[in-house]
Length: 476
Image 1: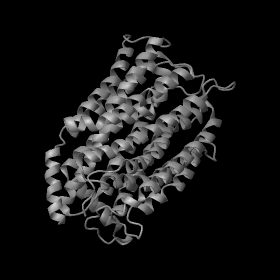
Image 2: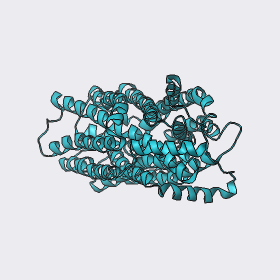
Image 3: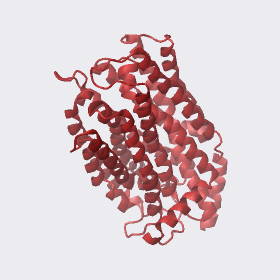
Image 4: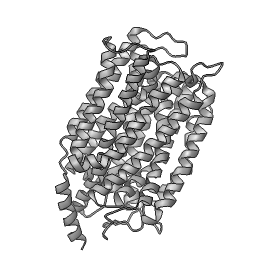
């Protein structure tokens, strides 16, 4: 069947709201999980990094499984809806348990972290992978898909900004016992309750808002599904996806880009507190939130940039600019060419840099997600099968892998430079300089490799229009 060229504002808004849940949990995990288990609970940074890497390997298995099952699943509620609902309440419970360990001791905490990181990722995957696939199924229009992704990204970053505000503006406020609120273990329990409830409420509202549009989606030639054929189906789907040149360029480009982002994001609290020497919750709040005004503006500009410059160009140049505004201030500071810690000038420049980072990195993200949907059309033309689930499962794994690999690199790096732990630890100039090497040149190398691979993506607007025309003829 033919899909609508235009998607109503209400459908886009309800659909996009689902990303608020993902963004709210994602920012808490990104901002707090490594810091909580290492700096607060006292586990070795390398051990925490290894635990995150184990969870990433688990993701490598479960993401394609859920994508493949979702692509082939049949029920009276459709192939996506049962998974969407299954990923709501269980994920919320697991989020709470992840940040409220009922054990003590390094070994027990390590196993708790591994188990509940894996469980939370798996349960959230039940919601996220089908959710992304639905976004590709709502419309086939080249520009309208970018608009759908823009709505999704708006709510994603709104969820992140809201939780970031709760963290710096409320939960991490100093107390008599803890001058640095992040080091207070008592705040993580109520903080996790709030985030878990945000995930549950926004995901359920989102599903009920767009669920009536799912049965109208074109499903292609679906195969009958049985668990006896699950692994054969999964490996065949992965092989078919990687055989698509456009998909390979998007996937591997995103792997390197998100590893780069993962290193930077995992060490964000360390960078703000120790490298930049920000003191006081107000300065942390201002710099921490500065990314989001730029991100929101980037969401609104994304569609115009994609229409004017093609998705590939938006991805490549956006990444280059993002890297420049991350790395250049760090390198300048390492060489004594940036304002000193504690000065108003430093805070102002960091705020400006963060705003620009948000502005320039969001259009590439929107372009990437819209391009993934385009490759699903290309794949259907080849094998007469819709594979949004397996495509977005692979893409979403590469996003989550950034945090796993980034955390692993961060943990090993902190251990190698002998990073001191504890609220009263003495941080040397050499520690800070070595931290700058990780935050600057290492982040840049991974990011530039990702941008280079993106530059090889060649599914243009003209080629996609040809594919759409051929699909319409093929479907009759």
